[in-house]
Image (tube, rainbow, N blue to C red; front, top):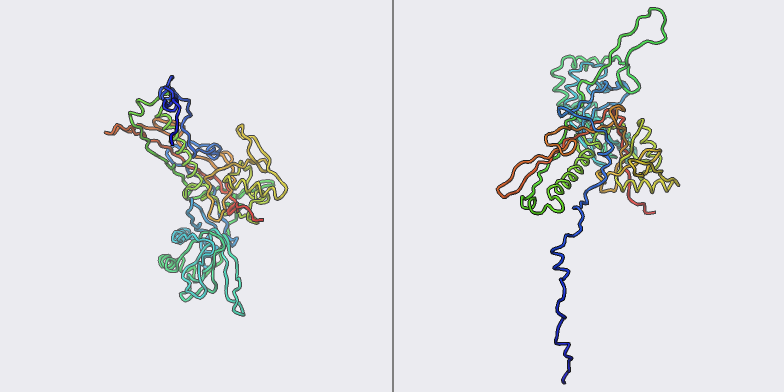
Length: 470
């Protein structure tokens, strides 16, 4: 069969009569954006913290000596994620009641070993040899034993400042009479009988004390646990006035500036030939600085030495009433300090706050903060920070803080006036040009954060942020 075709079918596409768009684009200057970066966030913490100039690279926080002997609870000093017992607080132990040799108490305190535990962990088992005393710095521990009919019964629930195993220090045959299980994550300080005996053997006064167990005199303190300043008021005539002095912590906390650094590399050919219409080196540097600032905020939240989550005093850590955040939880967090400046929470936590408020028929109001409308509760802004971690169990934390040196609050630390400073506290230094014609710049920022008083910073822990199934 023969198929006839028209003459037009053999001609092909018409000849090009004008410049193609593909060719024209090679000669055109396109309209383009600056390089974009998904990692950039609002960084509210860096914007809200008052930054204090820190010459010498360290900032020392001097506080009044604060401890409360005689209240039955043992108090601790936090140094980031590290915890140590206050030597004089060992006087709460019945074995050391009345013993006031600070040098010996300090030797004992220095021998305590920190142990972090997780929820559900068995700390000691009933019937096993007891060879240590355990001080609970933070967390909740349940003690269980065997009941009359062989069932498990709860003997006691212990929390911050409590202890168990005191008789293990002096009784070589001691056994645990109950099982201790952690109900929440927390921290123990442990002293073994061997370490206790080592101190006793070198301290005649302690040996004599253990034989006599004399009653101890009590030092008067204020309701905040600070050594009371003696004074007289309402007197007449020539009454003898009491002498006074303000005692300070002998080992005040010092915050050294931390550092975040990176090396920016740019090929000379790129810097020479491709700088229009945008300066390649400047754009590379801009994004590098953004990444460095993001890392800085992450460290201010999570660093184990100076990060805010690790520097909240144990007495300023609270738990939600039911799991999800509620108005009652935020009110309890607010009442722990004066002049709370803002809340800080993960964006998903802020969404959970909104759901929790809606369940109560309430809605957070909004306040103007630097020209932006942000949610608030009781007039206190609730600011987002995606650096606050979320656990595998979908729980997170809400921070609340008072800020500023004048308010004895939380402050940021930095040093300005650095050589080749690019931004306050951030420098960009030329390093070299390699044999491969690559220019290197050292980008550095120094920073830290300090909590001036324990009540300046609080946290609502273990907040459930997952959607409820109902």
